[in-house]
Length: 412
Ligand SMILES: Nc1ncnc2c1ncn2[C@@H]1O[C@H](COP(=O)(O)OP(=O)(O)OP(=O)(O)O)[C@@H](O)[C@H]1O
Ligand SMILES: [Mg+2]
Image 1 (cartoon, rainbow, N blue to C red):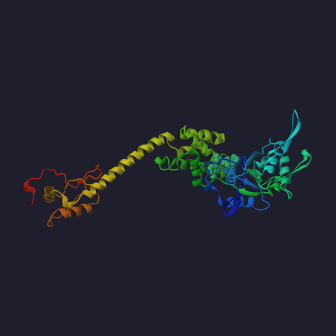
Image 2 (image 1 turned 180 degrees about the horizontal axis):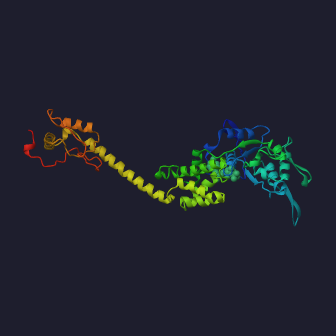
Image 3 (image 1 turned 45 degrees about the vertical axis):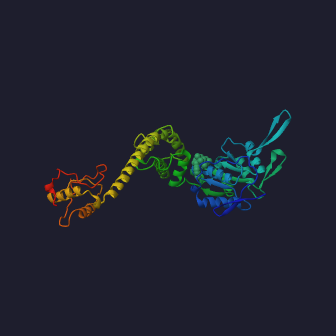
């Protein structure tokens, strides 16, 4: 059977050739947003022998889970996830005995099942796990790397070669003061620090999930997605400087942008972000929002304005193209002799020659007139008041006479 590899950050990893039950479906994933050194460390940890489990530590909604889902998709491995909050007990983790009409039977927990079948397992909220779960993990990750099912006659469950273990958690204030047991467990992991994506990458992510283009809504100068990400970053900065406790995650931004399909932008922000913020902080956060979204914008209203602007732009471009044509048409040699005569007459008689032209450069006009009028006459065009530049489309350079020239006006 052909064995293929995937190489990421210079590290090669075999793609699972078998049929995997739970390969996640990945849509709109932005590979560029993954931190290269983080990905390299992740690849290194799962590739070496024996592999090292990886713990991702980062803020909520920043993409930890999505990264592991994406990698299991790339390598065609089944992905499983379990939330290790206080209600996840050892039975659902390791396994338990159940009873039916036939008698008792054993059901593997998620860890045992993943180990036997070679699935990838993500333990979410590792820092919230019950001590008994941490204990199982602790002994599992010791050198022998197998699980002993005490309740099942001390059955030894070995790890399938494809099995990999990941964990994720949000950094907590007391993270540095992690309890001794957790410290010992942490010791057995590679710890990768995760942060929110950079602004351009977060824009790409929000845009990919919501379908709103990154350039959409530039009416007020800055596109909508860019302003949304800017808003999130203001909140995050305030949070980092301990001014506020509220946060704004990539997940919230995605929800906000998606809701904009039906709600106006501020209304969508209220329900996806502001209502989740600390009550005391909502007013100041709303103020920040109002600075970035001044009008009661909605995607639909921006769409209308943008459509109108595009139409106007198209008209302007057509006009410009016409002007170009008109400018090309001005060939002094081909100017009607009578008109030419009138022009000369006027240039002799008046110091202002009222005419309209598409040519804005006075020099250029003079050059043309130079070619038209005889050598002994030096025409001078005064642009002030005499020439209309922003009138729509005069098509020639011919003067608009202030009075009709008579034979007497003509010098020859
Ligand atoms: N690189 C990416 N490309 C596309 N979407 C992404 C990317 N990273 C994150 N996302 C999206 O951002 C949202 C949050 O990501 P995810 O659920 O992985 O966060 P998390 O860090 O696991 O959060 P929590 O700590 O709350 O579990 C998801 O909707 C996910 O699809
Ligand atoms: Mg997660």
